[in-house]
Length: 410
Image (tube, rainbow, N blue to C red; front, side, top):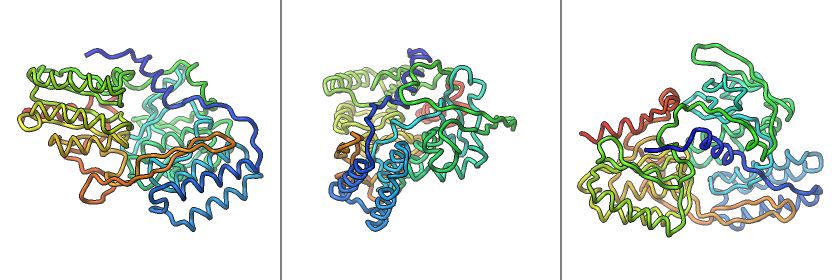
């Protein structure tokens, strides 16, 4: 297998994490009020079931509270408030995308069980890679996470929340709005390494769009296999004995490319593959019919009855990817391994978009309800739960693949 260079992958990761948002002209209080009313009406009239988590009374009260405060708020506070209104509805497909203009601190984090670790920094701060964040301005990280959770939809599951909370804990504006930081100009994180040594780390934020101009360092050396070739939406290669086919399905390409991939994977399986691994850990959704097409191609090979099929999921497996993971389970007899997807197997999806008339901020609401499990549970039932492991990922090892490669021999 070949992988792209660490620095190329890192640039791609950072660009995706911190997109550059279009600037907006100054907006009056009356215009913000109009935008807020527009968003509230879109949610109430277009969502399949807007009050499946909170009541209409609770929602209206939150909207009224924000509306009454608009005149005294800075723009970043209004944008944070809009994001929180969208998150109240509870499902991950319903949001007001006002956060991309908020200022972010120059780091990326990841939850490894209860440890929030630094995975990406600027080159000059690389000494802190892998350290755990234990406090934000003196507030224990558990309490800090609780304070930022309202900016994330809460009706999916804890994997979804973990996938987003790190982002808010690195967001200068949200940290200030929640009272975790005294200003938007700087923050002090308290870090701890694996030997118990603690250090304070002060950072100043960057505006969206400034991240691409920095030099970055990352903690993984080398990257685990599922992080290779991040510029490719789908790729595959054989592992070890040439009889195991690994397919990293990170996104949904155009139909012509998807059909081409489906045929090629089918042919490769027919040429002598007895174990198939489908990795959806980085797949945040798209057109699930394309995943169904892949299922149909794989079914023609008979590997789901004569060999072994595994599907790997994680907290970032969402929307169409969660649906396809269910298809792999139900139609290919796949063994589900890893973390559960960051979405309920039965829940609200299929988004309808809108744009706020004055600020141009996009939003969306869920317009359908889908059920992929007989029982309504918060998480998809995994055959083998294997959480992300920092010390393995740091040196390029993947405990999920290790377990599969051992299990296939049984």
